[in-house]
Length: 358
Ligand code: BGC
Image 1 (tube, rainbow, N blue to C red):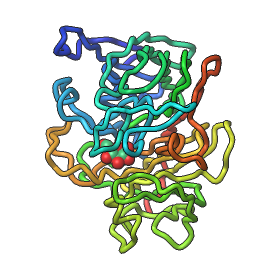
Image 2 (cartoon, helix red, strand yellow):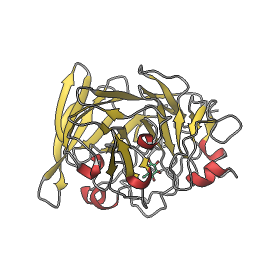
Image 3 (cartoon, rainbow, N blue to C red):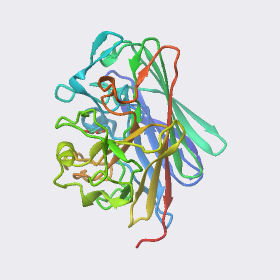
């Protein structure tokens, strides 16, 4: 396939608006398909140790499934990733009530978060880099958030097997903002039913423990001696059902890790190795944290692209972010964006292989 970007129809929204599907073919052979509905990455290939390209993300073949049943597969998440407890927060002396969409809490931006809106999409190329610029204006009061938020999310696929996602936003009133990306990965390819044999490394000395509703307790706890210690590579499955209160609360891994190296430069946030294929994915980010979610809510009821149901823990998410529930946690780094400031973060997913299968 020649490198380039092509566009086709992906279907129609209930209100009649047409949805597009962009196919980006990179010079290195990686192919990514992205829709302007939710900025969703529908498929993304990566080469195995023999150069064989296979789809490494979960998703659906048709728009309808994304409209009705998607657990945020491949989407842009906003205004705030993860949960805000009791779906409310106070800012500058005012209390804001957000849409409650998981029990009495707020998850991933609410009922119609950024994963469920139609983005404006502009394809571009620059040298060997191919990409899409997504823009969306979130109106004042959307899902309960204050201020009109202008958001730009840029996807760039390079010829060196890297996917870069850059997020920018400005506002006309102070508002919390915490954008992320929600691809579910399985580096063993589309026929794999489990991610438990993937080896994961997260360079984090601490994580933010959660209560039984997945809301941070506000503590920043050491990973030392717990199943949350991923500082050396270890199989995801080894301790995922451990007798550990945090594992019990999260139904497995569903936790925010505090990266040991801090700062707004790109730094390593996670490295995943899948032994059978040899595929490696490295995540670098300007963000202070990363949510590792092991697909614990997948239960075999969603029919995937390859005509197979997505089994329990058949995909994992690595969501770079500020910490969940930040507006209610005074000890966490602030996610408040004020008029005149520019929200700007970047995350890069890099794919490579290891020829050694031992
Ligand atoms: C969260 C999970 C949630 C899932 C939704 C993840 O980012 O951490 O708790 O259930 O998204 O699919």
